[in-house]
Image (cartoon, rainbow, N blue to C red; front, side, top):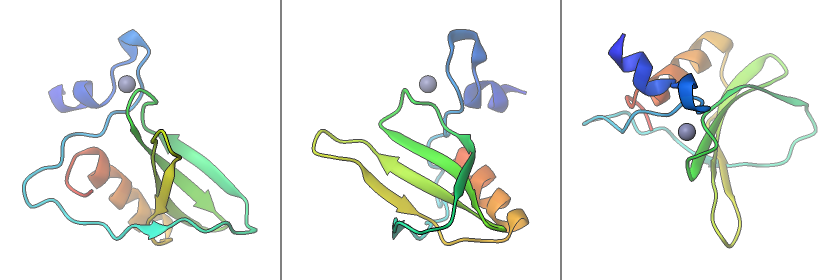
Amino acid sequence: MERESTLVDLSDGHGLHVAPAQPNCERLRWLPAVSRTDRTRVRAHTCECRTTIYEFCQAGGLRFVRRTVRAADGNRVHETERLIAARAERVWQRLLLGLAR
Ligand SMILES: [Zn+2]
């Protein structure tokens, strides 16, 4: 599928790339990341070659997306709200496809 080949190109060592934001894409609510005591596991992440990295995280029974924008004066980290797995998975897929940002 052509769309998938633009998202994942393993031939040159790259990982997942998010698609450009589509017209009328859903605006996700990005909350400042707060340090919590619960353990966070990164289930998937986008390619390190981009300035903005997205990680699909799990903490306890809930999942969320963490966005890190790398800048010379420090990283800016935001997270979506924490959702049950099925809903969070949908947010992650829509993000990758450019349907949410
Ligand atoms: Zn890349």
